[in-house]
Structure formats: C-alpha cells, structure tokens
Image (cartoon, rainbow, N blue to C red; front, top):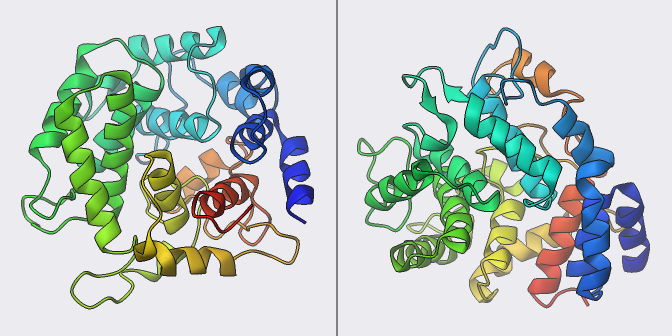
Length: 321
C-alpha cells in the first residue's frame, strides 16, 4: 500500500514527485533535483506563478480582507510555493520574488515594502519564512527577525495579542518558528538559534497540542489537518515543522502521532480536513478557489500535500519504513 500511495503522489504533480523521491524513497540527489527543476515550469506551481499580477501580488481587483489584499495574498501565495519546496533560485521564481520586492507594499502600514513586515507576529513570521526561503537580499527581514526576538514571551512562544496576553498562542508560535528557521538557514545567527530552541521546547512540552496545566487538547481544530494552513495551527503542520527542524520525535509527541495515524484512510492516504482555515470572508475564499491548485481540495477528499507531510512525519518518528 505504501508504495502505491507514493506512486500516486509522484504522478499527481512534480511538486510532490521530487519530495517523495527525496524524503520517502532516498533517491540520489541528482535524480530528485531533475524532478525539482520541473516544478516552476509545469503543474501546480507554474499555474500559481502565472497568476501573479504586474504589481507583484496575487490580490483581487477589489480586496475584501487580508487574504485577497496585496500583502496578504502575497504571503499566502509564497507560503504555498514553500509547501511545494520550489527551487528559490530558479529564474522564474527569482523574477516573481523581484516583482514582490519591487511592487508589493502594506496598504495599511504606510506603504511599508512587503519584506519590511507589519505589526502582527504571526504575519511577520510568515513573511520572514518567505524571505528566508526565497533568499531575499534586503534589510527588512533582518529587522523583522530582531522584532520577533524581542517579542518572545516567558513561556518560549509568541502571541499576536501580546502584550495584552502573556501566554503564547500555538498559531502565532508556529508561524514565528517557521520564519526563524527559514531565516536562520539563510542568515545564521546564534540569537535566532536560541529563540528557536526555546520555541520548539514550548511545543514539545505540550505534546504539540495539549494545555500544559491540564493536559487537555487546546483546540479540537488542531486535530484537523488543513491545506494550505495559512496562519492556522494543526498538528500535521506542527510535526512536519519539527521534523524539518531536526528535532527528535520523543515520547511527548506520542499522542499527536497516534492521532495522525488514525486519520489514514483505507487507501493509505490523508484527506483535506479544513480548507483555508483562517480566511475571514466568503470573498476571500472565492478569490482563492481554484487559484491555488494542489492545495484546494474539497473537505473530505484526498490531499496530496497532507498525505506527503503525514508520511514523512511517520517515517521521521520511526513509524513508517
């Protein structure tokens, strides 16, 4: 069954094929890089890149909210391309990032350039992840990283409602951790490494889904994998981050791993649990309907992205050969 699922992923799109070859089949680098080179020029990623506007964004003509605004749509689109692990140095990708750099601003933040960041830590975490992953040469992301370091709470996490709230949010914390990890890979800094370690321990102490005080599950929505997740937390996203960060999957993650295994279908796949969680309005959802191929499956249908992430999580945890 496992090989059949991998064959399905390989055939569905080059963005899945190359990651299967690397993460599940241990193919030689020269083989999976050939597959990766096709990602920007065919299938899902090519379709998304072609929808970029001349101003560098993926916005609606008349934005109704964050996800269809110039800055929000850009954050969302680049996060999806990160899910595909598209080659950041491909010519078509570099041209897209240059358009973002030159044209996208925060319309409610005094026209701050996109890579200069905004005020909410979760959005800044996503922006920093985009900047680091796509190798952005600009002063803005370093400033975002410095601000996020100063906003880490005593418990090791972050919260968009701080300083009003002194307890971290799983949503904000994971967004920031993804950003710090990507930026630290691009521009290593021991201060980032220390903040990462504290934030990772925040998740590990809570088993990626539990209240530290009672052991209860913080939010039932955490158990529902989503694609794309945006700012929204779920345990598939969280555990795939921990895997990517090189964390050991110890017994504290046992319940989260058990739950991921229960979501596997009889065909060995994982299904879309929530579509675009966190989008605030129907117009935002309509804007992204069909605009992001590969991550917009209807709820209850097989999701290639979630299946890939779940399989490599279980392999990382020693539960899948």
